[in-house]
Image (cartoon, rainbow, N blue to C red):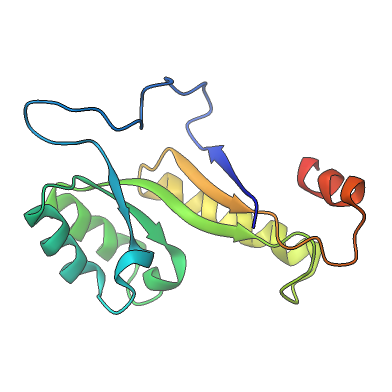
Length: 142
C-alpha cells in the first residue's frame, strides 16, 4: 500500500521536525495506535507516557469512541502531541468507496488534524485495482 504525507500547517516542514533524535529527556518518536488495537485512548496515553513517548499517531476509527474535544482534553492532560492522523484515501475504489467519498474522507481527516494541532495526515492511495499505473498516479495528483 502506498502512503503519502499531507502537511496541514501550510508551510514547508523543518526536515528534522519529526525525525527521531536523542536528547537528554527522551527520544522524539511517536507510537501508532495500530500497535495497541485493543486499548482505548486513555489507556494508550497512560502506557505510552510511562514508557517515555510524547507523541501518538492517531488511527481515525479509534477516535469514533470519543469526540474530538474529549480526545484533545486527554491528549493535553497527558502532555502528548499528535504526530499524524492516519489513513484517509483509497482513491482507486479498491475498498468500495467512490472517488468523491475518498475526497470527503480526506477532507475530514485534515479537519481532525487541524483541530488536534497535528501537522500531518498519512494518506493511502489504495490498491491499483483495474487502473493503469498512469491513471492511478493521476488520481492522487488531483
